[in-house]
Length: 359
Image 1 (cartoon, rainbow, N blue to C red):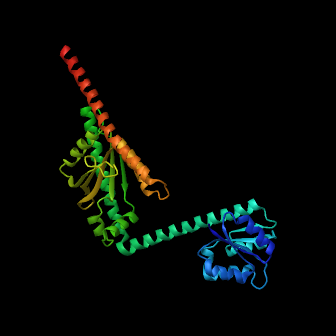
Image 2: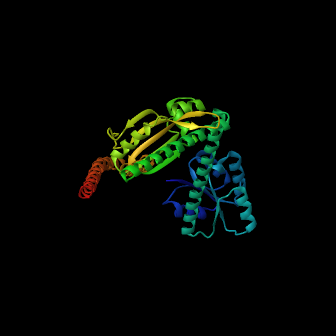
Image 3: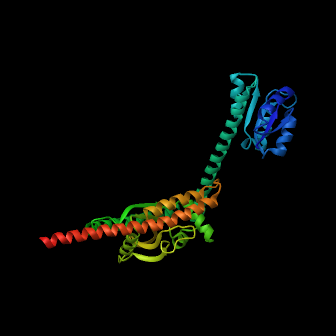
């Protein structure tokens, strides 16, 4: 349970608030500002919210707030002021000091519970957003420090984007030619993505290489990525063969997870290619990863990806078992559908031959 600290010099107020919140939180109480600061000194990393009375002897609520600001505790602990007043000037002063909300006397249990709950949730969201902004700033700083010239990094990313466009163009030409010859398309769609800078950095760090532009080019093969979604397995191999047979495409590596699926059931054909990119003053080969999947394979991979990156899913082993069973069923279904398509194509060819003979 989250810990709440209630600070009020009146025993009755502390008792009422304690009874309202005790079922939802671990409640600590303090009878004055001095006791509150002692408690904050010990538990400030654990306290989810501070309910603070303004008018107390010796150290009042304002003095507690000032001490919290001095120690940096207000960045970790949201404050709700306990008050019988509704004076606009006092509330404005408190908000300017960084107070999150007010709890007015007499206490209404449902109002107290909702204000405390909402304050904690909003404060946590604010902190998470600040952390993300800080992380992004660190990433930008890291990029500037480790990659040096941002212009060089941006130029490199343009080259990878150009490689994606080159592969897309080649695949679309093959699709048009195949459609003209066989009266059907070998693929349904092409998806492309350019790897984000933070993902590039993390990959190099996992591999143990310094983060430099040269190492990005050398050790990260999937900065430029394309996914080609085909209808049938044999279209995957036919299209991949036609692509790598082009005299300006260099096949660097092939991983066939269709013939040899991963243990979890993942199936896809991966090609790492060197693709020519024509720049204003030179021709340069840029790496690109092309993944070929059927529609069913892609749907399965999308579902498995959600499981992989969700941290709060119960019974993951059972879900993994079901996904593996689905992968096996998808493999059988893909080849059954391919067989049906072949029968339809053969029947159509026979019909056309018959018509020609009669003529």
